Length: 371
Image (cartoon, rainbow, N blue to C red; front, side):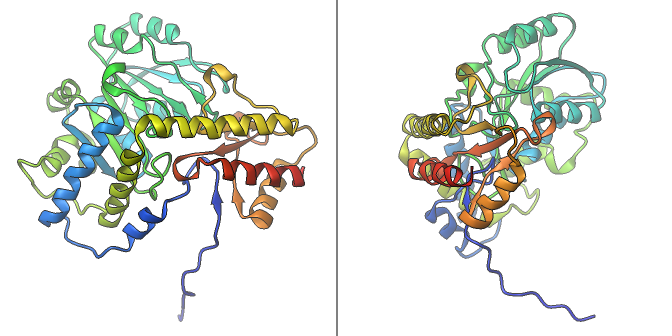
């Protein structure tokens, strides 16, 4: 059998979906840098820089703050597989697709799941989570800080205190919030958080920023059973990422780490508060422009996520056809709804390098023409 591939020539797109997001030229250039070994002293130094930069972005002093080799779902699997064991009682807050995914991962670990749910488009009431924690011995609370499927920014007030009083841990999905909206892991009392490189950090997919407290790591070290996934076992990863005890674990995705390094550098150079303001301004401009077009938004302004906006599809409009034409005629990618929101909303991401007023204006002009 004879088979050949054409030379790679991907089309140019403006990525305004829920991820991946637009990537800065400096990050793209980093991907072309020469490879070095994953135990080369220069690469280990680069890893140290990434870890320290992630501590700043997460606003944490956690020593074990690292990039997991994999996408955000690998970060989710790492947090749950290390902290949750069979028969543990786990409270999971669900108001969208990714809360449900956290519950499914806990279920596969054999945990006793207690769900606290809210309709898609609004947050879970923290008071309901606190009541669920108080109702029985609780090993962990799993919650999505920024729900990518709905565009909801989840309030976290009081949850950490409740689960800590119960002797448990707060696990937070910050895939769409890290680097785009205010997030303070230590002040909030989050024990383990994971994110994705391809969202508000604007690096390619393939690395999941992750942080875990020393208290939570002690629970990992004293588990009743071994961590089920060797690749994601934090006790092993710790020995690779710990500057004082470098032990080979796996071959890190070197080029992805180059890109993540540059993305973190750009974020730190901009400044976290300035970056949060830029994202908020872009989200507000989109909300205002959508209203001017007669389009309604799904989420109440009180918990609307500026970096991911859900726009209701007008009656009689084929949402898939609009997305198809946006891509074919304008080179703009947005996404449709998931689960119960399928066919009912468009999801527009303004994240990282793509969170710019000129991109908002380009999308609104295209929608005005197509609608």
